[in-house]
Image 1 (cartoon, rainbow, N blue to C red):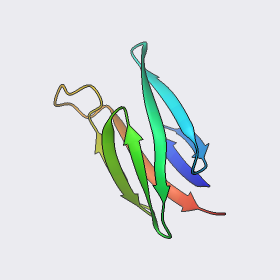
Image 2 (image 1 turned 90 degrees about the vertical axis):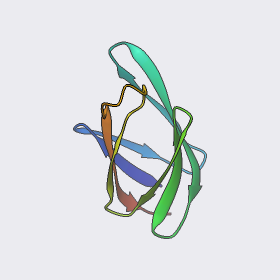
Image 3 (image 1 turned 180 degrees about the vertical axis):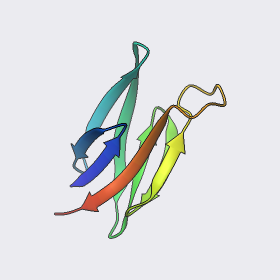
Length: 78
C-alpha cells in the first residue's frame, strides 16, 4: 500500500490501485505501475513518475509549464 499526499489530500493506493483528481473541473488519472521497497512508479495522466520514499515532486499535468500538483510518497506497507 502506498500513501500519497497532494494539496492536503491523502490518497492510499495499492499496487493495482487507480485514483483520480480534478483541477478546474478536468479529471486526471493516477495509476500505480509498480511498488518497490523504497519507491513507487506511477503514471499520472500519461506521465511516468518515480517517487522515492519521503520525496516530493511537483508535476505539470496539463503541459502549460506551471506545476499543478505536488505529490509525496509518505509510506509503503504490505
